Length: 112
Length: 115
Image (cartoon, rainbow over all chains, first blue to last red):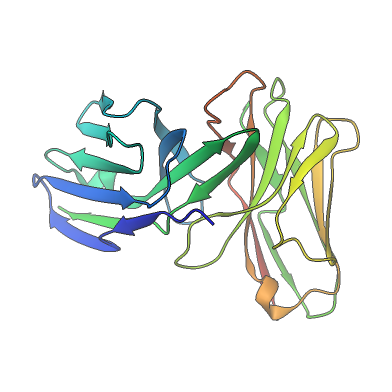
């Protein structure tokens, strides 16, 4: 069974601070996605990374896929209250299986 | 609105009753997924359709759960003889056939509370 562990589980920071959240596994994934979920809503896709070592930027968000494709990080610069939410990573195993394995998420609160 | 649509958004039922959820995917998406999410957890895969064919089922999908996608468009998820442990958010997602990396577009979910 492939597992994704996310850390920290909870994070509360002041507006303007920087932060990094992590997604780790002992398994190799063919792709890794990050989603953000707000209370009572479904997850919304932020980014997909597929190549080991890949770095993608989305405004103030920087996503990195580990060289061995077992881990990923999300860095947010100058966090804003609108960044508040549950950040989920999800790994795809490929090999004809289309199910994604999700981590438990990091719940981020950005205080104005 | 051309996103994934789910209904009902909320359902409260008594233990032992049957419930059915409906999902309308993005119209050009061939793939449709059901996930379940409980409090403090990430979504857990339940089942996957490509067009009308149900190609994958999780062991989480007990005999009381059945999902259909009869015409390859909308899908239903039925839970029979509900139990309190079935209380969760049921999420539907869809993706395009040529999406090799499997990006999912989720609906807003159907929250089930079993009393």
